[in-house]
Amino acid sequence: MIPAVMPTYARADIAFERGEGVYLYAAGGRRYLDFGAGVAVNSLGHAHPHLVAALKAQAETLWHCSNLYRVTGQEKVARRLIEHSFAETVFFCNSGAEAMEGVIKVIRKYHHAAGNPERNRIIVAEGAFHGRTLATLAAGGQEKHLKGFDPVMGGFDRVAFGNLNELRNAIGAATAGILVEPIQGEGGIRPASMEYLRGLRAVADEFGLLLAFDEVQTGNGRTGKLFAHEWAGIAPDVMGTAKGLGGGFPVGAVLATAKAASGMTAGTHGSTFGGNPLAMAVVDAVLDVLLADGFLDQVQEMGRLLWQELGKLAARHPALIEERRGAGLMLGLKCRVPNADLVKAAMDEGLLLVAAGDNTVRLVPPLIVEAPHIAEAISILDRSLARLAA
Ligand SMILES: *Cc1c(COP(=O)(O)O)cnc(C)c1O
Picture (cartoon, rainbow, N blue to C red):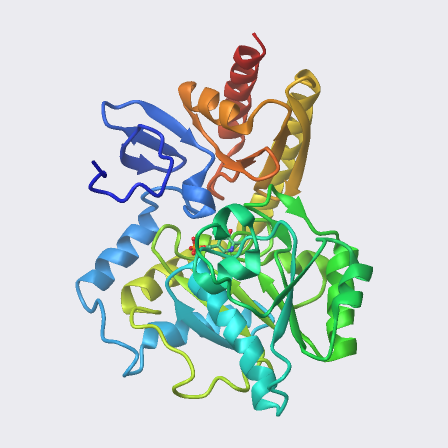
């Protein structure tokens, strides 16, 4: 018999009742240190008072009115995102995949509007993940995600992640844009080098392509900058983000330059729920915290601390851990034991982690994490690894 909830996930047999800060509490009361943050979503931890207050206040005034009318919350949040990024215009939606669908549409429409409809192919990277809709599955190109869902949507050309020569060679008359994650998340916390990201910008400019970043996971302070590409000192033409943007409220966004969005006129794109007043009130509150003086500096400091501690941890358990990688508070351990075993062992010890590709385990704690939480996580990891070794 099929479960009432369609069984598309391999779920751990545990249900959480409430959360507070960096901790989750399961039915029965057991406490877990949450270094998974709902897959890098609970950017400000659980039940952050400022977010709770913003959502409650909005819930008492207006939930939804549709995009048939002006939504003042969208106007305010868009202005704030524009002020703090490369973007000149923002489209709001509800998830990462929806944001990346929007990015793909912006790229295609740009060339169509410029009189070059034949330029509609996008170069993507091996190991990428852009979501589970049909277009984003095709962009990600993962065999295990695509299996059984033929026909695969066309329009994507895949090259090795990090290889600029291969990318240049893949550019043809039909190429419209380049789409990559600054750090591949689901693919196993695999960072692009700064030179690669700068090279992508140069290649896109040379060939008149739009450069698109998927910052669904890397964005919203995760790496210690508001967006990860800032570390490379370059900017994309268009970008999708989601996960941490609403701190747990479902929301996504497409950020673009005026030029990239020049084809996105009335009627070209839409989303019934996209940017509704509830979502906008929460994003506004998330931005209050992320953009407060010193907050991202603190994220960088905690990132450095966790990075150091993971280095020592890996050195203590060389038979189980191959290496640490990532940036800011988006870090990964590449394992020599099955990554699922480490996730399970840590959960048994009260620490939540998230498995990723390339046999890695992700550490993506809430951005409000403090030094004692990091010490607690490391000591649990030590115990878990010792148990796995035994
Ligand atoms: C999670 C993720 C997505 C998909 O987001 P959903 O909200 O699950 O649709 C897309 N791209 C990246 C890089 C992601 O990490």
